[in-house]
Length: 215
Image (cartoon, rainbow, N blue to C red; front, side):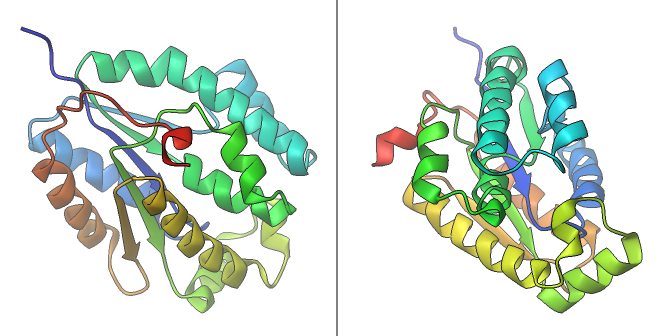
C-alpha cells in the first residue's frame, strides 16, 4: 500500500492584505482537521533565499526573476517534494502567483516568467487574497513600507489588478484558484473559507502538473 501524497497549497496576495494572520489561523484549522501540516515561504530559508530577501530592493527585472525561479526549484527539491511525498499538507506563503505579479511590476513579461517556471511543481490549490486598492493603501500606510514597490503611490491598484490577472493565468494552466476578497472579511473568516475547500480535497494526488503541460 503506497502512502498518500500530501496536498500542496499556496497563499499569495498584495502586501498588507492579511496573509500572515490568515496563514496562522489556517494552520490551526487544518491541524484540528487532522492534517499533518508544514508551513513554508518563498524566498525560502536557504542561503539563496536569504540572499534574495536581503537584496530584493537592489536587484531588478529579469535578474531578480531568475534568482526567484532558481530558489523555487531548490525549494521544491529540498523541502516541498520530500514533505509532500511524506503525506504532509504543505502551505507555502508566496509562490508562482507572486512571481506573476512582483516581477511584472519590474516590467518582466509573462512569457519570460512562465518559461522560467516551466518545470515547477504546481499547487493543488492556489489561494489569492485581495482587497480594494484604497484599503491596501491604507493598511500599507499604517504598517509602513517594507519593499521598494511600496514607495509608488500607484502600487496598490496595480498590484491588485495584476493578482486578478495572475488568477486567470493560473486557471488556464489547470490550477484550482480560490480568489478571496479581504476588504471586509476578518483573517479568521478567510481562514475558515480556505479550510473548508482544503478539507474537501482528498490530497491523494497521483501527479502534479507543470506549466508546460498547458501550453
